[in-house]
Image (tube, rainbow, N blue to C red):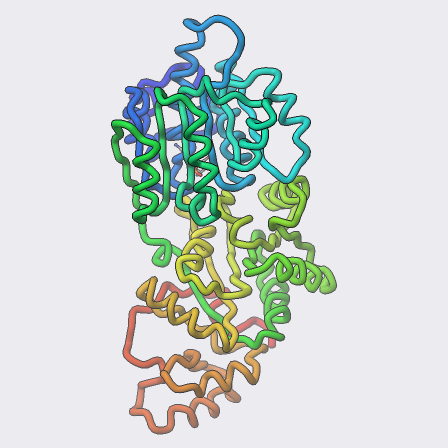
Length: 441
Ligand code: AMP
């Protein structure tokens, strides 16, 4: 199937050719015909599936077809609400590109920056607005935005909106848009609250569900290093220096932690940048652009800031801290290995994070490969290896020091059995690089 088969108009087809898209993705094949018929849509899909084009293209086409009929000043016709600034910018970039031959105007608004240029853009007249909820309501309250002319409403990443506490803002926005409209609702997951919220928004809708080609945990090569808290920075430097990844995203649980990682790397002469909520929007965007353009090889991010980052060739993800919510682990490793690229995800696990790892392995129904041989196996890690419960690091193969340690540990075990307990499926481990013996010691 081609985009032409979907009934798209020439100005949009031309823009898609410029983007290098040859064939619609599954969600585009399914959603575009439904939306061009004017129906509401409930989309269960993650970023990376091509969902942004799936919802923006039909809206643009309908607006384009309607422009001739409606003379007079430019009125806001489509509103796309999304949880984070990064996603908002990304969506608006897509809208701008897909609509470049249509004469349709679009803009984006989000908090954390001065409002003047956003107000000016709205004054000039906009057809499609992408916004985060807080700043949107703020500008509506100040009288700079009127949502009374909205014909198309998109709620993107609804589960994330809920997690971030935007539910009241969403309900306020719903009161401001006309009842007669086409509504689109997207969420990666569909727990009960999300289904309830979708009922408030959608009228007569059709549902499209796109499962990722393979579960993330099966697509991405994973490994975990047991390492003492104080040695995490050394291990990170070691991995960067020996493996020299072209694009590495490091996850830190806290903003403060992210800043600290950048400082430590800086001292070691490794250039990196942090993105999180305390950074100015300009700084976040610059870091992200440099990273996407390959000028910056290491980006350190908190979960919120990293959600939705679309870097197709992301080589390596390192979880400096393991998350206490196992689903977050899956979101994080899903940043790599996108669009058929093979990715590698490494986690650092301190003694007090062992229970998090257990929860993660339960969720992904796999054991994560343990890199037992590395220069920063700390006292904490070796002590932890002797803990009851049988989840000690996988035994090293070639390290004599560790071999004798392991011999003692396994003394009472039948031959061929290590401390890993009952045999469980093991997650794909990184081959050659990262997962085996470090190149230098
Ligand atoms: P999304 O799920 O909207 O975040 O899109 C993921 C990535 O796929 C983005 O980099 C898009 O530019 C890209 N993309 C979307 N649709 C297509 C397509 N039909 N062909 C190739 N790439 C696409």
